[in-house]
Length: 113
Image (cartoon, rainbow, N blue to C red; front, side, top):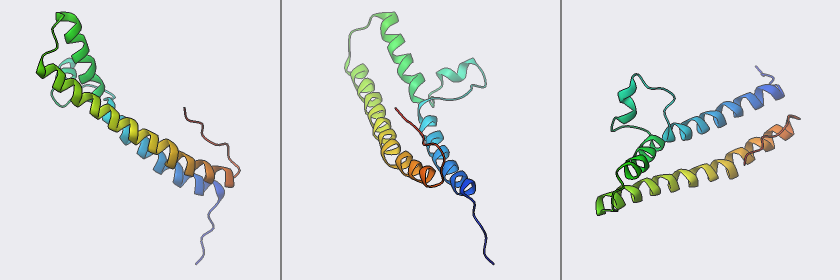
């Protein structure tokens, strides 16, 4: 049995894969919701919250840069750098490939800056 795949079905499949990849990437940075106010300060928080908390803490108490603060800052910076590299890969490979499929199917392409 042959199944006819329309252009929109072809794009829809690729759209789901790209959307899932972007969603997974975004989930590394922030959480969409909290069950209560205390969740914002729990140890398993997302990177954006942890980074903001560190910066606010440093600003609030005007602390000198101790070895511990430097270590945590370096850890967060490395995590941000890894996420930046991953996003660039999505942009330069996945979105580029998605746009090729969109163009073949006569749909508008996705611009990403």
